[in-house]
Amino acid sequence: MVAFKASDYFEISKNLSIFADVYKEVNTTYVDEVKPGKLIRAAIDGMLKSLDPYTDFYSEAQAEDYRYQVTGTYSGIGASTRRIDGRIFIDSPLEGKPCQKAGLRAGDEIIAIDGVLVKGKSKSEIHDLLTGQSGTTISVEVDRLSVGRIKKDIIRENITPKNVAYAGVIDNIGYVKLVSFTPNAGKQVRDAVLEFKNQEVKKLVLDLRNNGGGLLNEAINIVNIFVPRGELIVETRGKFPEDNRSFKTMNTPIDIETPMVVLINGNSASASEIVAGALQDLDRAVLVGRNSFGKGLVQTTKGLSYNTSMKITTSKYYIPSGRLIQRLDYSNKKEGKALAVADSAKRIFKTRNGRTVIDGEGIQPDVEIKSAAFSELSQSLIKNHLLFNYATRYRSRHDSIVSPLKFDVSDSLYADFCVFIQDKDYDYVTRTENDIEQLESQAKEDKYYDLLSSEFDELKSTMENIKKNDTENHKLELKELLEREIISRYHYQRGEIEVQFDDDMDWTKSKEILSDFTTYNQYLTP
Image 1 (cartoon, helix red, strand yellow):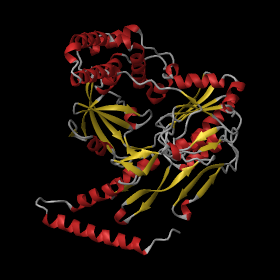
Image 2 (cartoon, helix red, strand yellow):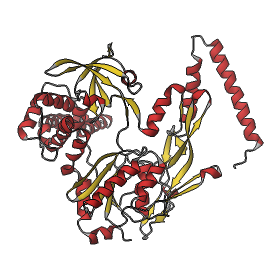
Image 3 (cartoon, one colour):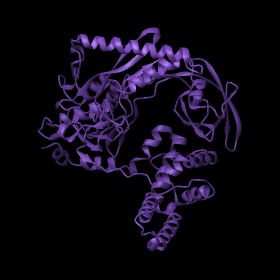
Image 4 (cartoon, helix red, strand yellow):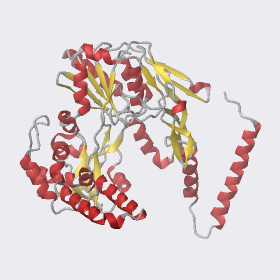
């Protein structure tokens, strides 16, 4: 137990007394009426904000939100919504859930929920209208392009999205897309790997990209599928003895030999980093992609009075090599922002085979693949919902399409899309235009602008002409985005995943690594 000095207790008592005095004065004498509950909540939020973004307070009304964070379960219709100019549209209905089973689909504009008109309502207001107790009925009226008004009575269900969004054999490789670590994540991955063994699949890819993590025990269960019983997977170290714990695999593994690649990126965090980092430290898999997020902080839930609760950081994660994966140092802030762990503070560790790994940077892939950023044109089309709107129109004109692996955006379809956006507002500024503007500003400051003004005018004119051809310059990128959007209207999340294999550089590299056992082992050799 950590001992507190008498001066610590005095500081706590003194500052609580000061806070109470300030609170009473504001509540009593402030010129405008104030709400006591809001004042206290603002004070709590401000206090916790000074720590880290993972320590949070939940009021009694937010209990359902916290339950969803932990379990991934909520009661509703199984669809997200999208707000466009104050209008509310169904965005991504989950396959097999109430919204999809009722026949509603992405692109349908929601007009009313239980008779309440929704135009102009906030996302939280829409969420409150759609969610409710499982088994209750909700009436949803939508306007569908080329059809008109449709009204459906939908029975809410407990919705638990699958941890494994996709599991299948692609190019003779067993592929598992894991999107969360809520209860049963380990079992779902285990079932997929057992199915691969039944099909005598000899190569595996575990995709943890964009997986923000979740339950620690599920991370350990997943690593245990691929490594023997008794292996140390992670340690937690905190202020109190009870926070210092070691977690080892406890079950018989399913597959400790099949060559495996794990995909990670900058949005792979927490439990994802434990799985990827442990498999890397134990030299059980080759990691491909980009540096992970770097969240090595452990949160514990504490029940408080009046049915409130809080999630508080109590310890840090250390994976088998001994390294800490935390990237930001929240005890060291500048202008309110946490600083990255200093290079001088980073330490070198070794994997079981003796490969070098470094702490303080999240998890570094064994094979780094540079990610290509979307063009400004694509970003503008996404931001202005034009890809979404075109897919809605396409779905209204085509009852069905071929399978995701066979679907392709033809040149004629792409030409139709280009015509569709001609009269739409999607103005954008390229990085090159920003650079020209900055250079022009610098030239004025340095008194060179009069000498260069004609060159600047010519350069701007040239850029405008180039931008007129941007739909051709970025044709391949836009075709890929269109494919994903259109496929999702017919084949939902599974189809959206399948259609990306052809253009996925991480997947291409994974196939190359797994193509030869000797090549694979070279990546695991110091």
